[in-house]
Length: 281
Ligand SMILES: [Zn+2]
Image (tube, rainbow, N blue to C red; front, side, top):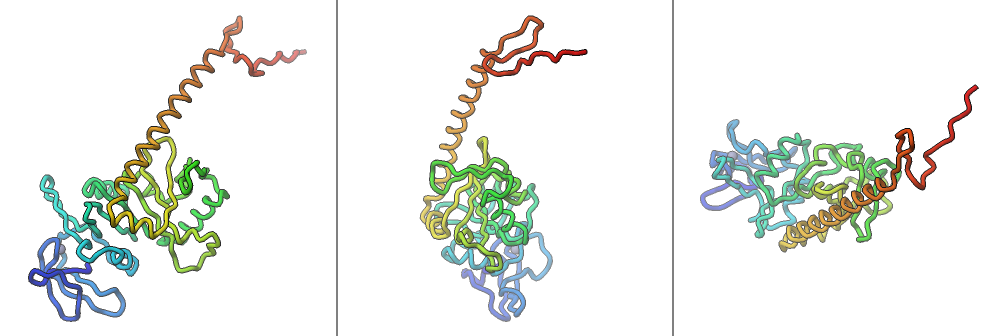
């Protein structure tokens, strides 16, 4: 953890300091070595937040895009008595969780239920194959069927399982993939400077938006993010409903075109489905 309580103050780890955990109030000690990022650790193994993962530079850099008093906020659910530390809780009650490690889909679901209004930011460079796979699909060289919509920067992905890591596909909240890596892979189109946001799959297709780092940080900071996401989801839900109705009507229309031959074989008018039987010798 970056912060611990010393009296009433939240302070950062400094050599030889002791403090109390902001979540469980148990003693924590400052770990200020050279190998890991300076942090606070519990004195003994404890049943503090079991969702907490060891922090990396990537976590810290992300958190620092937001004010310090929004970072590492302990949230408590009175109903279940659960307590967890949100990486960032904005002034508009949006939780941002920065996820570097692998996560089991069940834990992902639990965290989404607990935080409700949240967005995941996933380190897309954790596995070496993730970015090359995404790049291949995004350049239409793959099989996931990425289609640009009439809105700039918004895409429909028919088979997202070939494009994004599996644990995130069924997320009920937006997932940002941060592919900004160490520059070891060629990225002439500058895709790494932007994020790919996978929206909750409530419609026929997965929807993905390509957004800039700056726009994401600005809208999550000023509170526009939640409103815009909801508006976008409502819009594509409506659009999919219209499509569904149109395709049902289309099927009805086709079924009107089905006539039956004398021997009961359906024949579709206008289609060359009836073939003259081959002469048998
Ligand atoms: Zn604790």
